[in-house]
Image (cartoon, rainbow, N blue to C red; front, side, top):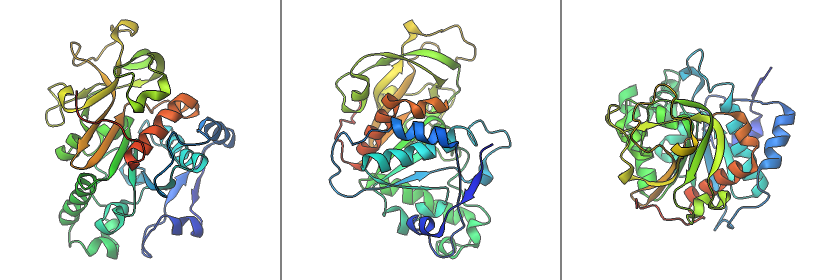
Length: 319
């Protein structure tokens, strides 16, 4: 059974939390899985950081998870540990793993070189009643709506001003009440017709962010998503607005599965896009916990985080 542990005071201080911040709880995973994940993390980054980097790894606040959410207690703690291990083992960045929404307040978000959304779910941009009891939130407004608008603007301004965002798997299923967030990511979760081994096509073999795959297609066992238009879930994702890196290889995938909403469309599995002066990366990979013990996928994740930090240069304009 996985246990929860309260962050030690020294670690809490490293999270840059205000004195009145809520205490975080980060789930532990089995020690032998920790060792496997750390062993799968690259020993050095693909490129040297231009300066010391600090990366926010954000988890959905616990109160937002449904009772039987398929990510809480499963891939979320594995992702937390993996994103931490990638930074610590490679030396590419200092990871700050938290579910504290205060990190998105304007005075806090600028401390980070990039943000990683670890399978985030639900309307996490909306402050909770407990958040609104904290002085740092009350400084920005007297009610939730006012503070949420501050948080929304803070995130969008951070990326537009040159920040980086790396998101994976269910990140596109969160904040559905906020279309601009889904537009920022480039797509909206529209279902997962596949939870089996599928074929993956490398759409741009020379792109730096797919170097981990050596330009070759591959097979992957994961929960595979399709996406819709950010503003209208009845329409397919507009792939002219993103630079697609990986897609479902229909010729090597079971296309007889149920619940495919847009069968005539392509199914992008990783892409990048610009937002103002900033950089956005998304991949659908990240449900099955063995992915975090796969050296190739871990290299793929690390490259994406270095890209978000601005250390690994890569083209982002749609082709």
